[in-house]
Length: 395
Image 1: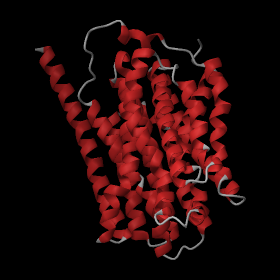
Image 2: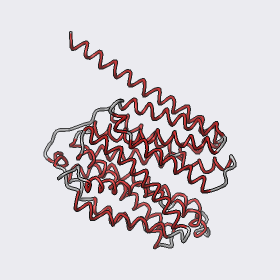
Image 3: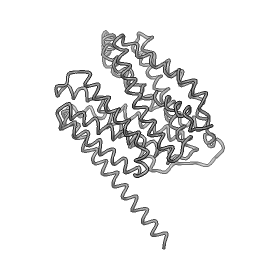
Protein backbone atom coordinates (compact mmCIF):
# COMPACT_ATOMS: atom_id res chain seq x y z
CA UNK A 1 0.00 0.00 0.00
CA UNK A 2 1.37 3.40 -1.00
CA UNK A 3 0.25 5.76 1.76
CA UNK A 4 1.75 8.69 -0.17
CA UNK A 5 -0.67 8.24 -3.06
CA UNK A 6 -3.15 11.04 -3.61
CA UNK A 7 -6.04 8.56 -3.43
CA UNK A 8 -5.17 7.52 0.13
CA UNK A 9 -4.61 11.10 1.26
CA UNK A 10 -7.79 12.34 -0.41
CA UNK A 11 -9.84 9.58 1.23
CA UNK A 12 -8.48 10.37 4.68
CA UNK A 13 -9.20 14.07 4.14
CA UNK A 14 -12.75 13.41 2.93
CA UNK A 15 -13.52 11.28 5.99
CA UNK A 16 -12.00 14.01 8.18
CA UNK A 17 -14.27 16.63 6.60
CA UNK A 18 -17.31 14.72 7.87
CA UNK A 19 -16.38 15.77 11.40
CA UNK A 20 -16.63 19.52 10.93
CA UNK A 21 -19.83 19.30 8.88
CA UNK A 22 -21.57 17.19 11.52
CA UNK A 23 -22.62 20.17 13.61
CA UNK A 24 -22.41 23.39 11.61
CA UNK A 25 -24.11 22.31 8.36
CA UNK A 26 -27.59 23.04 9.73
CA UNK A 27 -26.71 26.34 11.46
CA UNK A 28 -28.67 28.43 8.97
CA UNK A 29 -31.71 26.17 9.38
CA UNK A 30 -32.14 26.91 13.08
CA UNK A 31 -34.32 30.06 12.86
CA UNK A 32 -36.89 28.46 10.53
CA UNK A 33 -36.61 25.19 12.41
CA UNK A 34 -37.48 27.08 15.61
CA UNK A 35 -40.62 28.45 13.95
CA UNK A 36 -41.57 24.98 12.71
CA UNK A 37 -41.48 23.58 16.25
CA UNK A 38 -42.77 26.69 18.03
CA UNK A 39 -45.84 24.81 19.29
CA UNK A 40 -43.60 22.86 21.67
CA UNK A 41 -43.12 24.60 25.00
CA UNK A 42 -39.39 23.86 24.97
CA UNK A 43 -39.08 23.86 21.17
CA UNK A 44 -36.62 26.79 20.80
CA UNK A 45 -34.26 25.37 23.42
CA UNK A 46 -34.36 21.89 21.87
CA UNK A 47 -33.71 23.30 18.39
CA UNK A 48 -30.60 25.11 19.66
CA UNK A 49 -29.54 21.93 21.46
CA UNK A 50 -29.73 20.00 18.18
CA UNK A 51 -26.68 21.90 16.91
CA UNK A 52 -24.31 20.86 19.71
CA UNK A 53 -26.04 17.58 20.66
CA UNK A 54 -23.75 15.38 18.51
CA UNK A 55 -20.66 16.64 20.39
CA UNK A 56 -21.78 14.91 23.60
CA UNK A 57 -22.13 11.55 21.86
CA UNK A 58 -18.86 12.00 19.97
CA UNK A 59 -17.13 12.46 23.32
CA UNK A 60 -18.82 9.43 24.86
CA UNK A 61 -18.27 6.95 22.01
CA UNK A 62 -14.72 7.95 21.02
CA UNK A 63 -12.98 6.25 23.97
CA UNK A 64 -14.90 3.01 23.38
CA UNK A 65 -14.05 3.18 19.69
CA UNK A 66 -10.36 3.53 20.48
CA UNK A 67 -10.38 0.37 22.57
CA UNK A 68 -12.31 -1.57 19.93
CA UNK A 69 -10.08 -0.62 16.99
CA UNK A 70 -6.94 -1.51 18.93
CA UNK A 71 -8.29 -5.01 19.45
CA UNK A 72 -10.20 -5.73 16.23
CA UNK A 73 -8.65 -3.41 13.63
CA UNK A 74 -9.21 0.08 12.30
CA UNK A 75 -11.45 -0.39 9.30
CA UNK A 76 -14.12 -2.88 10.40
CA UNK A 77 -16.31 -0.14 11.89
CA UNK A 78 -15.68 2.59 9.34
CA UNK A 79 -18.07 1.51 6.59
CA UNK A 80 -20.92 0.87 9.05
CA UNK A 81 -20.38 4.27 10.66
CA UNK A 82 -20.47 6.05 7.28
CA UNK A 83 -23.83 4.47 6.41
CA UNK A 84 -25.44 5.33 9.76
CA UNK A 85 -23.89 8.81 9.55
CA UNK A 86 -26.11 9.47 6.54
CA UNK A 87 -29.17 7.98 8.26
CA UNK A 88 -28.75 9.94 11.49
CA UNK A 89 -27.62 13.13 9.80
CA UNK A 90 -30.54 13.27 7.38
CA UNK A 91 -33.14 12.73 10.14
CA UNK A 92 -34.26 16.37 10.01
CA UNK A 93 -35.36 15.97 6.41
CA UNK A 94 -37.52 12.89 6.97
CA UNK A 95 -38.91 13.31 10.48
CA UNK A 96 -41.56 15.67 11.91
CA UNK A 97 -40.96 14.84 15.57
CA UNK A 98 -38.26 17.03 17.16
CA UNK A 99 -37.36 14.39 19.73
CA UNK A 100 -36.77 11.83 16.98
CA UNK A 101 -34.62 14.39 15.14
CA UNK A 102 -32.57 14.77 18.32
CA UNK A 103 -32.22 10.97 18.42
CA UNK A 104 -30.94 11.17 14.84
CA UNK A 105 -28.45 13.83 15.90
CA UNK A 106 -27.29 11.53 18.69
CA UNK A 107 -26.76 8.73 16.15
CA UNK A 108 -24.83 11.20 14.01
CA UNK A 109 -22.58 12.00 16.97
CA UNK A 110 -21.89 8.32 17.61
CA UNK A 111 -20.88 7.84 13.97
CA UNK A 112 -18.64 10.93 14.01
CA UNK A 113 -16.96 9.67 17.18
CA UNK A 114 -16.17 6.43 15.35
CA UNK A 115 -15.00 7.98 12.07
CA UNK A 116 -12.96 10.73 13.74
CA UNK A 117 -11.13 8.31 16.03
CA UNK A 118 -10.40 5.91 13.16
CA UNK A 119 -9.13 8.57 10.75
CA UNK A 120 -6.80 10.23 13.29
CA UNK A 121 -5.43 6.81 14.24
CA UNK A 122 -4.88 5.91 10.58
CA UNK A 123 -2.93 9.15 10.05
CA UNK A 124 -0.67 8.13 12.94
CA UNK A 125 -0.38 4.59 11.51
CA UNK A 126 0.36 5.61 7.94
CA UNK A 127 2.77 8.52 8.45
CA UNK A 128 5.87 9.24 10.51
CA UNK A 129 8.03 12.27 11.27
CA UNK A 130 7.91 15.05 8.68
CA UNK A 131 5.19 13.34 6.64
CA UNK A 132 2.99 13.09 9.73
CA UNK A 133 3.49 16.79 10.54
CA UNK A 134 2.58 17.81 6.99
CA UNK A 135 -0.50 15.65 6.83
CA UNK A 136 -1.75 16.67 10.30
CA UNK A 137 -1.57 20.32 9.28
CA UNK A 138 -3.23 19.59 5.94
CA UNK A 139 -5.96 17.58 7.69
CA UNK A 140 -6.98 20.44 9.98
CA UNK A 141 -6.75 22.94 7.11
CA UNK A 142 -9.05 20.85 4.89
CA UNK A 143 -11.46 20.36 7.79
CA UNK A 144 -11.58 24.14 8.24
CA UNK A 145 -12.14 24.78 4.53
CA UNK A 146 -14.77 22.05 4.49
CA UNK A 147 -16.53 23.82 7.35
CA UNK A 148 -16.70 27.02 5.30
CA UNK A 149 -18.03 25.14 2.26
CA UNK A 150 -20.68 23.17 4.13
CA UNK A 151 -21.96 26.05 6.27
CA UNK A 152 -22.19 28.26 3.17
CA UNK A 153 -23.96 25.56 1.15
CA UNK A 154 -26.25 24.85 4.10
CA UNK A 155 -27.19 28.51 4.27
CA UNK A 156 -27.96 28.61 0.57
CA UNK A 157 -30.17 25.52 0.76
CA UNK A 158 -31.92 26.73 3.91
CA UNK A 159 -33.31 29.67 1.90
CA UNK A 160 -35.41 27.11 0.01
CA UNK A 161 -36.43 25.03 3.02
CA UNK A 162 -34.88 24.45 6.43
CA UNK A 163 -35.02 20.67 5.94
CA UNK A 164 -32.93 20.53 2.75
CA UNK A 165 -29.48 21.09 4.40
CA UNK A 166 -30.00 17.81 6.29
CA UNK A 167 -29.59 16.00 2.96
CA UNK A 168 -25.95 17.13 2.82
CA UNK A 169 -25.15 14.39 5.32
CA UNK A 170 -25.52 11.87 2.48
CA UNK A 171 -22.02 13.04 1.53
CA UNK A 172 -20.76 10.18 3.73
CA UNK A 173 -22.24 7.67 1.25
CA UNK A 174 -20.20 9.31 -1.51
CA UNK A 175 -17.05 8.83 0.57
CA UNK A 176 -17.80 5.18 1.38
CA UNK A 177 -16.51 3.51 -1.84
CA UNK A 178 -13.13 5.25 -1.56
CA UNK A 179 -12.59 3.87 1.96
CA UNK A 180 -12.92 0.31 0.67
CA UNK A 181 -10.77 0.96 -2.39
CA UNK A 182 -7.85 2.89 -0.92
CA UNK A 183 -7.62 2.41 2.88
CA UNK A 184 -5.92 -0.73 4.18
CA UNK A 185 -5.51 -2.18 7.65
CA UNK A 186 -2.10 -1.30 9.13
CA UNK A 187 -0.11 -4.21 10.58
CA UNK A 188 0.47 -2.37 13.85
CA UNK A 189 -3.23 -2.43 14.68
CA UNK A 190 -3.12 -6.15 15.57
CA UNK A 191 -0.10 -5.96 17.85
CA UNK A 192 -2.21 -5.54 20.95
CA UNK A 193 -3.81 -8.93 20.30
CA UNK A 194 -0.42 -10.66 20.50
CA UNK A 195 0.96 -9.18 23.68
CA UNK A 196 0.04 -9.61 27.34
CA UNK A 197 2.42 -6.83 28.41
CA UNK A 198 0.73 -3.76 29.91
CA UNK A 199 1.65 -0.84 27.70
CA UNK A 200 1.17 2.75 28.80
CA UNK A 201 1.79 6.18 27.35
CA UNK A 202 3.99 8.67 29.24
CA UNK A 203 2.06 10.70 31.86
CA UNK A 204 2.54 13.95 29.95
CA UNK A 205 -0.07 12.73 27.46
CA UNK A 206 -2.76 13.74 29.98
CA UNK A 207 -1.49 17.32 29.84
CA UNK A 208 -2.12 17.30 26.09
CA UNK A 209 -5.59 15.78 26.54
CA UNK A 210 -6.71 18.37 29.09
CA UNK A 211 -5.11 21.12 27.05
CA UNK A 212 -7.12 20.06 24.00
CA UNK A 213 -10.33 20.36 26.03
CA UNK A 214 -9.26 23.76 27.40
CA UNK A 215 -8.48 25.03 23.89
CA UNK A 216 -12.00 24.24 22.72
CA UNK A 217 -13.68 25.62 25.85
CA UNK A 218 -11.97 28.94 25.13
CA UNK A 219 -12.34 28.95 21.35
CA UNK A 220 -15.96 27.79 21.16
CA UNK A 221 -17.12 31.01 22.82
CA UNK A 222 -16.61 32.65 19.39
CA UNK A 223 -19.40 30.92 17.42
CA UNK A 224 -21.64 30.93 20.49
CA UNK A 225 -21.31 34.58 21.56
CA UNK A 226 -19.80 36.67 18.75
CA UNK A 227 -23.20 37.04 16.99
CA UNK A 228 -24.70 38.50 20.18
CA UNK A 229 -21.65 40.68 20.86
CA UNK A 230 -21.74 42.13 17.34
CA UNK A 231 -25.41 43.00 17.83
CA UNK A 232 -24.53 44.94 21.00
CA UNK A 233 -22.01 47.10 19.12
CA UNK A 234 -24.45 47.90 16.32
CA UNK A 235 -23.74 45.24 13.66
CA UNK A 236 -27.20 44.16 12.51
CA UNK A 237 -26.39 42.56 9.14
CA UNK A 238 -26.43 38.77 9.44
CA UNK A 239 -24.12 38.45 6.45
CA UNK A 240 -21.41 40.45 8.25
CA UNK A 241 -21.84 38.30 11.34
CA UNK A 242 -21.48 35.17 9.24
CA UNK A 243 -18.37 36.53 7.54
CA UNK A 244 -16.80 37.31 10.92
CA UNK A 245 -17.29 33.75 12.19
CA UNK A 246 -16.27 32.15 8.89
CA UNK A 247 -13.08 34.25 8.82
CA UNK A 248 -11.90 32.53 11.98
CA UNK A 249 -12.13 29.18 10.21
CA UNK A 250 -10.36 30.59 7.16
CA UNK A 251 -7.39 31.91 9.14
CA UNK A 252 -7.27 28.65 11.07
CA UNK A 253 -6.82 26.84 7.76
CA UNK A 254 -4.01 29.21 6.75
CA UNK A 255 -1.96 28.57 9.90
CA UNK A 256 -2.66 24.82 9.75
CA UNK A 257 -1.14 24.71 6.28
CA UNK A 258 2.01 26.27 7.79
CA UNK A 259 2.19 23.97 10.81
CA UNK A 260 4.81 21.55 9.47
CA UNK A 261 7.31 24.31 8.66
CA UNK A 262 6.77 25.89 12.07
CA UNK A 263 7.12 22.56 13.88
CA UNK A 264 10.52 22.03 12.21
CA UNK A 265 11.79 25.04 14.16
CA UNK A 266 9.82 25.00 17.41
CA UNK A 267 8.91 22.55 20.16
CA UNK A 268 5.36 21.42 20.97
CA UNK A 269 5.38 23.67 24.05
CA UNK A 270 6.53 26.72 22.11
CA UNK A 271 3.77 26.26 19.51
CA UNK A 272 1.15 26.08 22.25
CA UNK A 273 2.69 29.21 23.78
CA UNK A 274 2.44 31.06 20.46
CA UNK A 275 -1.08 29.76 19.80
CA UNK A 276 -2.42 30.86 23.16
CA UNK A 277 -0.68 34.23 22.83
CA UNK A 278 -2.30 34.83 19.43
CA UNK A 279 -5.70 33.87 20.84
CA UNK A 280 -5.10 36.12 23.86
CA UNK A 281 -4.33 39.11 21.64
CA UNK A 282 -7.35 38.21 19.51
CA UNK A 283 -9.72 38.13 22.48
CA UNK A 284 -8.24 41.39 23.79
CA UNK A 285 -8.90 42.99 20.40
CA UNK A 286 -12.51 41.83 20.54
CA UNK A 287 -12.92 43.08 24.11
CA UNK A 288 -11.44 46.54 23.64
CA UNK A 289 -12.13 47.27 19.97
CA UNK A 290 -15.87 48.03 20.16
CA UNK A 291 -16.01 47.99 16.35
CA UNK A 292 -16.51 45.47 13.56
CA UNK A 293 -12.99 46.01 12.20
CA UNK A 294 -11.39 45.25 15.57
CA UNK A 295 -13.56 42.15 15.96
CA UNK A 296 -12.29 41.01 12.56
CA UNK A 297 -8.70 41.51 13.78
CA UNK A 298 -9.62 39.37 16.77
CA UNK A 299 -11.07 36.70 14.49
CA UNK A 300 -7.86 36.69 12.44
CA UNK A 301 -5.56 36.31 15.45
CA UNK A 302 -7.77 33.73 17.18
CA UNK A 303 -8.05 31.65 14.01
CA UNK A 304 -4.30 31.72 13.43
CA UNK A 305 -3.67 30.60 17.02
CA UNK A 306 -6.20 27.77 16.99
CA UNK A 307 -5.03 26.60 13.56
CA UNK A 308 -1.56 26.03 15.00
CA UNK A 309 -2.65 24.34 18.21
CA UNK A 310 -5.02 21.68 16.86
CA UNK A 311 -2.47 19.88 14.61
CA UNK A 312 0.15 20.46 17.31
CA UNK A 313 -1.95 18.54 19.84
CA UNK A 314 -2.74 15.80 17.32
CA UNK A 315 0.91 15.26 16.36
CA UNK A 316 2.08 15.35 19.98
CA UNK A 317 -0.41 12.60 20.90
CA UNK A 318 0.66 10.58 17.85
CA UNK A 319 4.27 10.95 19.00
CA UNK A 320 3.53 9.91 22.60
CA UNK A 321 1.12 7.01 21.98
CA UNK A 322 2.66 3.52 21.51
CA UNK A 323 1.33 1.78 18.36
CA UNK A 324 -0.28 -1.00 20.43
CA UNK A 325 -2.63 1.44 22.23
CA UNK A 326 -2.71 4.19 19.62
CA UNK A 327 -6.43 3.78 18.95
CA UNK A 328 -7.26 4.13 22.64
CA UNK A 329 -5.22 7.31 22.95
CA UNK A 330 -6.71 8.80 19.77
CA UNK A 331 -10.14 7.98 21.15
CA UNK A 332 -9.30 9.89 24.32
CA UNK A 333 -8.05 12.81 22.24
CA UNK A 334 -11.35 12.90 20.33
CA UNK A 335 -13.29 12.71 23.61
CA UNK A 336 -11.47 15.67 25.16
CA UNK A 337 -11.78 17.60 21.86
CA UNK A 338 -15.56 17.39 21.68
CA UNK A 339 -16.17 17.48 25.41
CA UNK A 340 -14.53 20.91 25.32
CA UNK A 341 -16.98 22.04 22.64
CA UNK A 342 -19.96 20.63 24.52
CA UNK A 343 -19.16 22.09 27.94
CA UNK A 344 -17.89 25.47 26.68
CA UNK A 345 -21.31 27.18 26.95
CA UNK A 346 -21.98 25.43 30.26
CA UNK A 347 -18.72 26.71 31.74
CA UNK A 348 -18.57 30.21 30.24
CA UNK A 349 -22.15 31.46 29.77
CA UNK A 350 -22.86 31.82 33.53
CA UNK A 351 -20.19 34.54 33.61
CA UNK A 352 -22.45 36.67 31.41
CA UNK A 353 -24.84 36.99 34.35
CA UNK A 354 -22.34 39.36 35.96
CA UNK A 355 -20.02 40.38 33.09
CA UNK A 356 -20.62 42.09 29.76
CA UNK A 357 -19.41 40.45 26.55
CA UNK A 358 -16.42 42.80 26.47
CA UNK A 359 -15.50 41.98 30.06
CA UNK A 360 -15.79 38.24 29.45
CA UNK A 361 -13.55 38.37 26.38
CA UNK A 362 -11.00 40.47 28.30
CA UNK A 363 -11.02 38.00 31.21
CA UNK A 364 -10.48 35.11 28.79
CA UNK A 365 -7.69 37.08 27.09
CA UNK A 366 -5.88 37.30 30.43
CA UNK A 367 -6.32 33.56 31.01
CA UNK A 368 -4.98 32.82 27.51
CA UNK A 369 -1.87 34.96 28.08
CA UNK A 370 -1.21 33.15 31.38
CA UNK A 371 -1.50 29.80 29.57
CA UNK A 372 0.93 31.06 26.94
CA UNK A 373 3.46 32.05 29.59
CA UNK A 374 3.00 28.66 31.24
CA UNK A 375 3.85 26.77 28.05
CA UNK A 376 6.87 28.94 27.30
CA UNK A 377 7.96 28.23 30.87
CA UNK A 378 7.60 24.46 30.44
CA UNK A 379 9.71 24.71 27.27
CA UNK A 380 12.52 26.45 29.18
CA UNK A 381 12.24 23.92 32.01
CA UNK A 382 12.46 21.07 29.47
CA UNK A 383 15.61 22.58 27.95
CA UNK A 384 17.16 22.97 31.41
CA UNK A 385 16.34 19.34 32.29
CA UNK A 386 17.94 18.07 29.07
CA UNK A 387 21.04 20.18 29.73
CA UNK A 388 21.37 18.81 33.27
CA UNK A 389 20.98 15.25 31.98
CA UNK A 390 23.75 15.77 29.43
CA UNK A 391 26.05 17.16 32.15
CA UNK A 392 25.34 14.22 34.47
CA UNK A 393 26.00 11.71 31.66
CA UNK A 394 29.45 13.25 31.05
CA UNK A 395 30.43 12.69 34.66
